[in-house]
Length: 291
Image 1: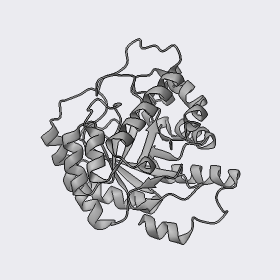
Image 2 (image 1 turned 180 degrees about the vertical axis):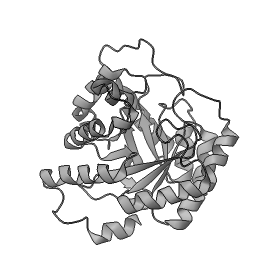
Image 3 (image 1 turned 90 degrees about the vertical axis):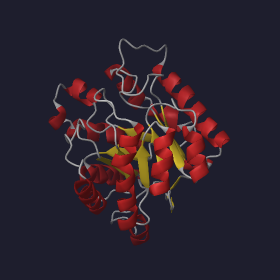
Image 4 (image 1 turned 60 degrees about the vertical axis):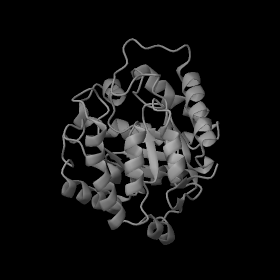
């Protein structure tokens, strides 16, 4: 299936790095390093230089914590998106939110994609994306409410549940008016899943790819990596890149990442082994479009 992200048509064989830029004071990864606007904008410039194809802006951490109102989420994200759009006119930008009212404001500020990590809990989200001509990421979260952790969750077949829920969300988004070529599905590693589930979702990712919808994976430094290897947050890069390589080989197309340079090199190597990338750097035309 053709994949379009913002103003860009993604070439066949190109693996997209979605760089994470969280404007939150309590992010699990950077502990608020990009909470201030200037720091967040500087981070965007950095990840673009490192090879990011797009950026994902978030204003609320996924884990439980202090309540963030819609107004505060908009305050944290809308001006950052506007600043990114001014500095990088053609760089695709996604907004990581489950709230339609937030998505509407941030899309108006310049975002191109709604990254709904909580599985469509707000039924108006796809309609808002459609009205703005934006794309949407349809994620499996096992039916959990936003910002909650799974507790003794079980599935007869976790991958069958992932396929059923994400494809249903994708079809609903298209029915709401979202361009089919702008819809992605995400198995939602660690969202509504324990480590065993996330490992199985990775191992059987090809079943999601076989649906025909472009697949996005968000693997970066997640708990399933830490628990599998018995390592703390600051030692999860190796495991993340291993899961990234497997996912790329099995057909995922977009990779949400903290460590952009390492992810870019990993994906380029996988693509080169597959024969879908020349040995040299990506074509200048693609780099020009991306920036």
